[in-house]
Every structure is written in structure tokens, then in C-alpha cells.
Amino acid sequence: MSDHSKILTQRQFGTHAAGYVASPVHAGGYSLTRLVEMLDPQPGWRVLDLATGGGHTALALAPRVVQTVAGDLTHPMLVAARAHLAANGAGGVLFVRLDAEDLPFGPACFDAVTCRIAAHHFPGVARFVGEAARVVKPGGLVAVIDQLSPGDPKAARFVNVFERLRDPSHVWAYNEAEWKGFFAGAGLAVTHYEAFDTHHDLIPWAERMGCDAPAITRLRAMLVHAPPPVAAWMKPNLPPAGDASFVIRQFLLVGRKA
Image 1 (cartoon, rainbow, N blue to C red):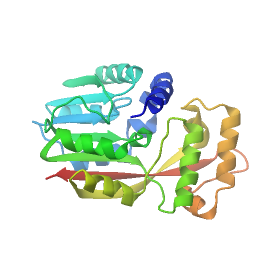
Image 2: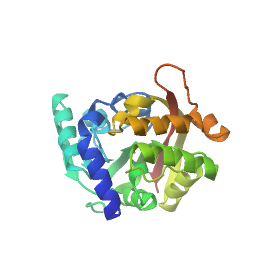
Image 3: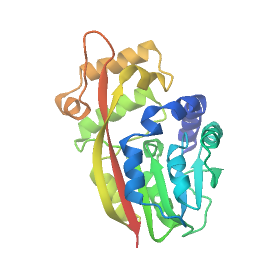
């Protein structure tokens, strides 16, 4: 991960760690339930959760496996995640500060690797997937949930610019074909793929990353003036009074190491 991206990520998430622990989108919902369902973790497993954020995925996995390692680049996020898991009685969790693109583990030491709603912050996504594949055992699983971009390059650029206006540490959200290519390149055979919509109210979504009123106004203007392919993708709802809302399309991709 580049030094500039590391600085931005640590600045953004270090400042807003508590907000991500409390975020309903991250704390639960369909994506987390579905990840655990498709992973089907077993009691003897060791699982690595990368970019753990508020620790929600680690919390869901911990009661089902022998050990969960929760890793994150940002120290305040790890502190917040540790407190969150302790408050919920989770045991068997080891917290490690790490870079998802350069993991401090030997090969084939985990039964599964997870990463949920974080990879759009990684400048080297192919390297991250390669590292996840390296540290998982043969027959083990890598499961990623992240934001999805449309296949049309112009629409993808609009969606990513919108995201970066809200959060400067956003690097890029890739499309389905690109993600499947990352998995294939790392030697992971796709066992499951699905895409789904997540609905967001603009103001709390923006304020969670510290956006001020002018930034929120610009974000709303982008929704108002979104080209038809982007509007079809983001499904903005723009009432004359009240908060705007829109969709972020996400995916769940699971791959098995040969």
C-alpha cells in the first residue's frame, strides 16, 4: 500500500473509528449474515479478518472458530474493535496492526481469510488478493465483500469520484469482471458470487466521514445531475424536502485455493 494511501486511510479511520463501530451498515445486515453463511466456518478453523474496522466480521466469526485474527492498518480502529468485541464477550480474537497488501504471516496458516467493505481503500487490490491466497491453506477460502462499480468506464469513474468526494481515502471500486480476474490471478477458484444493493441516506453517510455542509451539497448535486447510466446504478431518491438517498451496489465473492 502506498505511503500516501496509508496516511489518508489512517487519518480518515483513526478520526472516525467510533462512527464505524456504531454504523448499522457495518454492524450487521444482509452482507454480514450472508458472508458467514457462505463461509460456513468450522470449529477448528483459524480465520484472518483483514481491514477489520469496527470488528463486526471478527465478532460474527469468533464464536464459530478456534481463533480469529483481526487485522487493520489503523491503530485507533483496532482499539475500537477490541473494545467492541470485549463488550460483546468475544474470545479467541488476536488483534494485529498490519497492511493487507503485505501480510506478516507465513504461507498456508489460515483456513479462511475475510475482508468486508474495505478493499476499495487498497491501491494494490491484486496484491491484497494474492497475499490472502498465500496465507490460506490449500482448500481454504477467501471471502470478500466490497463496493461494486458498473462495467461502463465512464459510469465507473463517476461513481468513484462521488465516493472520493465523501472520503479521500477511497481509491477505486472495481467491477465484477475485474474482481473475478483478481481471484483467478491468485489461483482462487470462484465458488460463489452475488451482488446486492445497500441503501444509504446521504447526510449520515457523508457525516460519518466528517463531510461538512458544502461537501454534502456537492454530493447531492452529483446525484441530481448523475448521467442516466449512473442514475440507473445508484438509484438516487431526491425528495424536494428531506434527505436524499441512494444505493451502493456491493458484492460477495468467495474463492477456494487449490
